[in-house]
Amino acid sequence: MTQQPVAVRGGPARVTPARTVRGPRFSRAGVRSKRGAADTMHWSLAFAAFLLYIFVTVSYKLPLGTGEVAMAVALLTLPLERTRFAVSPVVAWSAALLAWASFGLITSSYPAIVADNLRDFAKVCAIMLVTVNVITTRSRLRIFILFFLATFLLFPVRGAFHMQFTAGGVGMGRAGWVGSYGNSNDLATFCLLQLALVFAFIAAEPNRWLRYAVAGEILVLPLLIAFTGSRAGTIASAAFCLIAFGKRLWKPKTLLGLGAVAVLVSIVVPHALFNRISTIDDISDASSGASKESSSDLMAAQGSTAERLEIWKVAAAIVRDNPAMGVGLGAYSVAHGQYAMQPQFTARGNRDAHSTYLRLAAELGIPGLGCFLGLVAATLIEAERVRRQARRLLPKRAAELGYLEIGLIAYLVAGIWASLGMYVFTYLQLTILHVTARLLRSELQQAQSVTPGTPQRPTAVGRFAAGLKSMPVAHR
Image (cartoon, rainbow, N blue to C red; front, side, top):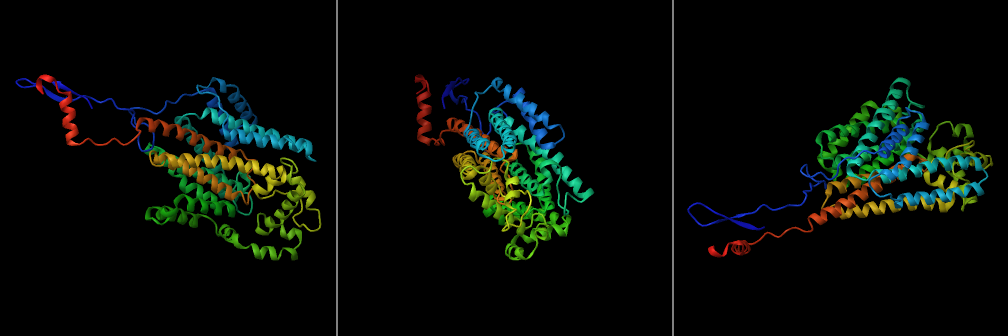
């Protein structure tokens, strides 16, 4: 710190410290304080079209063709973005998966089905490319998360609760809605991803009122998961809590929050759904009696453990017969119907595999499953590396990234019992995790350049020497 002499009436010049020019201030969240905003929100046509696509995909309130138009507009206007066009590793891995699946047009016995599903997956890859190139600032990420959470709450969540209380759900008293939300198991896993976004937003959001507004979903989303009666969703939710809270699970504040959710669920959720969830460990009993029951009796209870065991036997047979290329993207259901006609199988008809990993292995072969797992592993490893580097200097931002990681891990746990490999939510979560890690890496580098180390406090001798050095010669 430099010092300047100031003349004092009737005496010698007094030395006063000069104003120090400071670098930008960072809060504990890793963003600049109000006196220096980290970034300014810049709207663009590509970003607006991206949000429109999210609205169409999530809400089912506009024709699906509107989403395709929005995606096309976003792609065409990407060159107008202020940042340089980028093809990140998450997009490269997805493109590799698409390229491998394209071989199914040649090798599959169902080329028409494969062609339709390839077009759909190409759209997913395109929206991943758009996401990477439009969410380039912290402000845009914040707007996207708020918009995504609000859209999911106002349409799928509200619609599922309305259908549950007015029509008794979509089947067997389980919550559901329309489109992809009509499957209660899938709806539960989508709610789990939203829950991870909620915790991530609360961890790093500086605005208290926005945190309070978003925190309400901590009660709503677990309640809807319970109403779905999804055992996969229940197991994945338990995994999320165990990983996210860990040692903090037994702290009074955490126990109070979890207890409030548990009390609300126990009061509102029907007893029949609790009975369904309690059959998670009935594998041995169900499988032992499977051979004594007819096929119609076995398939009467949709989603039962015994049914899935029989379906997995068919899926394993398909993988065993097609280990290299699979039966083609999207062709599992038809292939299952043909395989199930063999006398050793009882799960007759065209059915889903009820497992992300078995279905991908059956449709794309072992290499295709490996490509998907490579995409997941590369994204998680990158995010975890950045989180560990940032947790000391930017703890709140690191916590935000950590919740997104845990949400993806819990989602993958649910994928053991649900086919999630071709949903846009799966790849959108992977892309958001990558984008958040990229932003945190940039913020970390900036914070380290501003505050490269903790300054040492000068000693009394050092302060005296500095003052003596800056004093004019006539007054020494």
